[in-house]
Picture: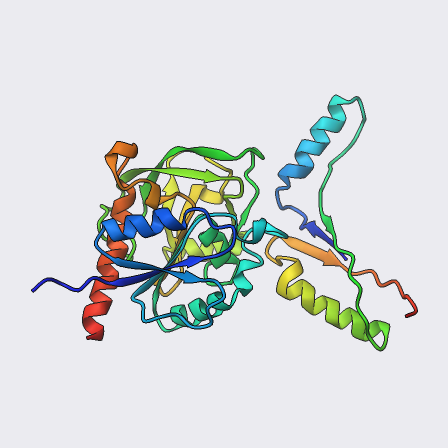
Length: 231
Length: 78
């Protein structure tokens, strides 16, 4: 018997641009991926949710600030509160921070320039549902493309996050001015993660790197486990 | 209302403006860039208008992690 395909929803906001890549990558990694429109007030039966990159609502006011009030986001907040797996990529990370599901905030890059290139990352922990396919301390190469990826937390919050090991990915070189070179964080419970790099753009070595598939296939596997236990 | 980066928070936009002003030959200290939001609110009195705008700031208009805000009320008759 083949194991069931987990159902993963990809949220679509006006201004999203990486939603198709996310859907394609998740499908290629053997998930049943489907779009969820931002006006939906309820999520379908899902084993995980992905918030893709883009410029939701034009990034007006602050990046992610408007999207967090989308009807579908309220459903995502509930889904996360029930322990559901949520991964936010780039703009998705910004939205999760604005929604209070993840700690910190993403500010304009220190250089004021948009950064678009492959960056080296270090996996700080591989015991989250999003990194089980990685080795602890492994170096990954995954592209970033953002103008506002400069993650910030004040001293107190940063120390708390360090002590609770909520920092999952760091840049192995300075990229955008992010505090502690933080590239990805997880919530305290460990079921919500956000990262600025784009794993969905790095799932085939033809495109430069397949390291992103380690992150996404970890998620697919964790979602599959949930689908199995739910049966 | 006026939203601005909190003291001690890096403001790259302000820094860019500051260095441009210096290149133009102006003698300036630190430049910080915020945002002005003009809002029309109808309320019974100034106090209740302020409470309402404070709620807007907390929920949407400012991110308290990095921004502070000030509210200035200007009365307009209908």
